[in-house]
Length: 205
Image (cartoon, rainbow, N blue to C red):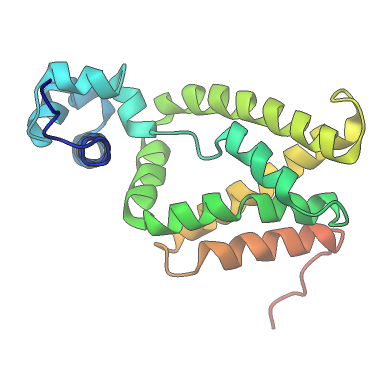
């Protein structure tokens, strides 16, 4: 019997490192040159791997740029189910997003670069919209299960839509400030405003 010289944990770390290197190379090159002027071959060379290796990790250039979904639907369901039943639905959704927010802040530079690349290259938006629609459907079902109503009830869809908008607003404000403010604080501010009934802010003096 021949033993594998690379333990599973080490192999997984190397795979994650290669995936991260490809995603970072894609984002940096597109930020510098524009979407239409970067090829898979360019990205692979920048990450010091072959084009064949690239396709082991991503089916296309766009997938390397956009990376994983912001919210993993299955994981969100688990986190939402873990929030005590007595917690109101809005606060429960906020609690379920904590893991996502922490991960984004831990990978701050790449997320800020990804947001900038998407803003500079509108051709990426349809893919984002499609992924967002799929995630919202799953989150709506999770919210419906939590509050005990059918998925086609108006409340779960409305809560999913408004909290998604609050999260995106916080994320864009975070990016616009170059990450100077905590994403956690910005998300909390947005959710607190929703919880208060979205009151109009006081005019600046």
